[in-house]
Structures are given as C-alpha cells and as structure tokens.
Length: 181
Length: 181
Image (tube, rainbow over all chains, first blue to last red; front, side, top):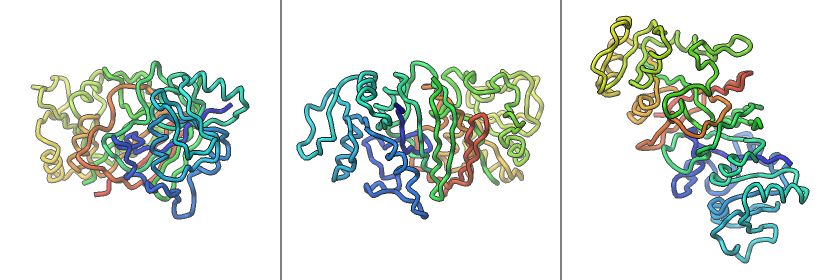
C-alpha cells in the first residue's frame, strides 16, 4: 500500500489561514482549479491511484462547507471529538478514532493499495508515525505570514528523495518526494 | 537596484536548527556545495550580480564560525547590539544599526545595483518593509521539524510571480520568484 499526501501550501508553508480560510488559494470557491491550459495539476491522475482518503475533523468540516460531498471514494474521518457524521453523507464516509498505525494496518489488510492522507494535523501525525511514503506538494506563489502549517514538530528528521518537480503557468510549483525509511 | 534573497531551506522552511546548526545541509562544513556535475546551484552567477550583502548578527556570527572571511564584496552587518567588529576582518565589512529602508536608500544612492539580503530576521524585516525584489530559494529534501524559519509574520500578504524552477541531481529544488509590488 502506498500512503500519499497531495496538498497545496503557500510558499511559507501554510495550508490555510488561522481560521481555515483559503481565500489566498486560486479556486477557493470550491470549483476545480485549472490553469490556462486546463491542467488540473495531476489531481485527477492522483485521485485515480487512490482507493481511500483519511482526513481529520478540520479538513472534514472544510470539505462539508463546500456543499455537496465531493468524493466517490471511501473516506475515513479521524476524530476523537465528533460523535457522529451528518445524516446526508453517503455511506462511503466513516467516522473513526483509532490511531494512524492502527487505521493504516486495517486499510492495508482490507485491500486498499493507494491511501490519501489529508489535513495538517493528520499529515503530521502520520509523518511522525513513519507511515507516509510520498509527498506531492504544490507551492502557491504567495506568502501569507501566518496560518495552519503543513508541517510541525518531528521526533526525528525525515529524509526525502526528490522524484520530480513541475512548474505551471499560474506559478504553482509541484514537487514529488519519496520518504526515505 | 535589485534586492535579492538567495538561501537554502529544509522542505519545512527552516534555514537552520534552533541554535544555528546546519548539519542537515550538505556542505555544512563550510566547503562549497557542488552536486555530482560540479554545479554550484547558480551561486557564483548570483554572487557575480551582487555588489553588496546585508546580513544580521546571527548570520554574521555563523559566517565567522566558518573561519576565514569568505566574501570579497562589501558586507553590511546590521545589528543594534554589536558594539564593534573583530579586528581581523577586511575593511569591506561595515557594522550598521539603521533600519532596512534607510540602509537600502543609502546603498542605492552609493551606486549599488545588486544587493543580497541574508539571514532569517533580516530577510523578514526587509520583506515586511517591501524592499525585496527577488527570492531565490533552494529547498533541501529533508524535514527537520523545528529551527529558525526563513519566513515569519507579515503585515500583509506578499504576492509573488514565479520566474523559474530548477531541480538538481542531489534533490535540491531551486525556485526564483519576483515580488509583485
């Protein structure tokens, strides 16, 4: 099973402003973000390689705020505080509270081959647990100064192997790294 | 006059560990960092375009710790706490305490056409004062979790225009941005 992160950050490393605002990100109205040539920054190809997503409560609530549930794939919402999911969600969405290692083992055993980890806290937990295989990070050409950081404290350095970098006409720079284990 | 930043960071945005350690950076022994093809990541070409450097006390002390003074160009050390420079430095090094706008105006008037701003605090001050024209950032493929960040709080967003990105065999990804003013 390959465990991946696919996320956009400001050049100073934030995935959102402090209250979750994405106004600095092109396409922050929830519409797909395409550049002038209709390129979706590899998002469709990446999603096609994924069987399931894991996200924390903050990211889940951001996704809910966009309106219609956007994912057809299985989604695991990790939360210790949420009691239940809204009634109107498809049955592909599950609420769980177990730890990253446990959920990863369970998903691997259930036959998932591509797993997408989303959200700052959740990504940091999975990184610290040594569970991330690949990072695909799109850097947006803006500095926002403060907000929710993609990365956080680590118990030890995480060495990476650079796979490729692509830059787009709108100024996005997307780099793919493998985590060296 | 063009005011530039040329710096390396970890992928999580640190220019050094908390006490200034650069052990995570290839070439941290003060030797030039070359990749397998002898490429110096554009450093020589960049330095050739520069007439003077401005750095803060922390960066100055890091440079001193490398031993022999490495710069032939004029260097302005900005500090409000340092009383004087060590005696053994060449007379191309000046100690100043004035603010970023003042020193920038003075250097422009003295005929400097390329100015290199170095060091986290100093870069942040110059960015916040709207004085930086260009950022050349080399991201090193490692996450170190904590340290001295390149970027900090801003009084407003800084929009950037992506100029180019080059990736190197050793995994460095170098992006050049112009600050949109």
